[in-house]
Amino acid sequence: MNHRSIAIDGPSGAGKSTLAKRLAQELGFLYVDTGAIYRTVGLAALRRGIDLSDAAQVAAVLPQLTITMGYGEDGLQRMCLDGEDVTAAIRENEISACASKVAAIPAVRDFLMEMQRKAAREHDVIMDGRDIGTVVLPRADLKIYLTAAPEARAERRCRELLERGQQANFDQVLREVVERDRRDTQREAAPLRQAEDAVLADTTGLDLEGSFQLLLGIIRERLGMEEGSHAE
Image (cartoon, rainbow, N blue to C red):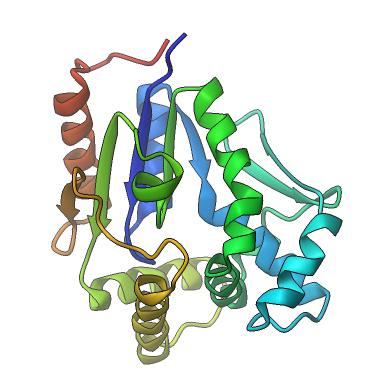
């Protein structure tokens, strides 16, 4: 059976995970949050006191890690590290920077590649990340490059942190967003870029519902899915 795949790439804070998760529920696809996988590696390295700027140190610890990805009864992805459910732990703000650093290491990307591709072979998937359409699923049925102005993304990130009860300073978050964009676009290993055949979706002036409707319309048009249709 041939499964369909939708790749959603874009910079940090563009809303990829939130929108991809909702789109998957709407269309009956499996949602694969690749950022959560890298966050799990970042958390593992941080807990072990590893220098994240030392690629050799990070690569050396990979064989010691047991990372699994599962889905709860609610259909949401859960990450486990060495038998511990770290789904909540990887969402702490400091883990974002850790994830970006380990994602720039080729050995880490190779280590996690098969986990991502296996999900696409076995299910209809919506997968979001930084290099899904360019590296992980270069033959995806549909590629979308989701973006928004840095200021809009920083504002969304602040709102998300506050909703979780964490502190958020707009200027600091904006600096972090801009710095992460720089790292992600300039790294040697699978840099963030729009695939040549990706549809550009800029949500700067849209709220969550407007962004969702924009992407849903693109998917239905490009994949020929009628309203109300679901993956088999």
